[in-house]
Structure formats: structure tokens, C-alpha cells
Length: 86
Image 1 (cartoon, one colour):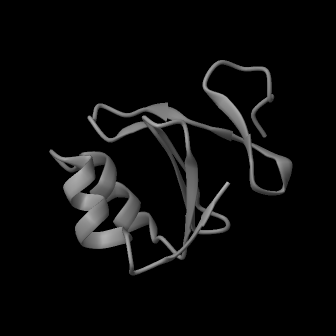
Image 2: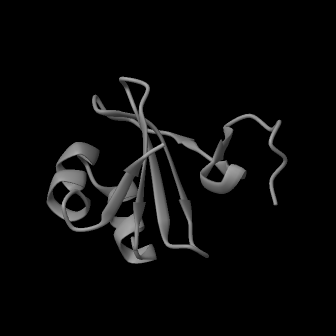
């Protein structure tokens, strides 16, 4: 497991450390993924962090390679996965 004090690591659900990566987007600031729980985490520019559950590795790969992260979130994640504001 990655140490919680490493750069780019945030404490997320159930106080687990998770590596978060910068997001080149006008909508989101950071993102991360836990393949063991199929949870994707997104920190938005407004400072809120959301977890999306049941996101497959293929969907996560689609998100990170999408030319527009916001469009991908709207089309493939929002409303299709259980979500919770952290």
C-alpha cells in the first residue's frame, strides 16, 4: 500500500490511502481508482470529492484516455453508478 504521506496520496473511503492523479480538465482536479473495490474517486475543481462504485477497469481506462473527462463522466459514469459525496 502507498504511504499516506506520499505526494498525490489522499485518504479516502474507510480511511484508505489512495493514489490520486492530476486531471487535465476544466471540471475535475484529481482522480483515482481502486480496482479491488471497483471504486473511482474524483475530486472536482469546487473541492468536492465523489466516489463512484461499480466502475470497471475498462470504464476507468475509458475515463483516463477520454479527450474530455467531463463528457465521459456525463455519458458513462453519472447516473449509471452508485455515487457518494465524500
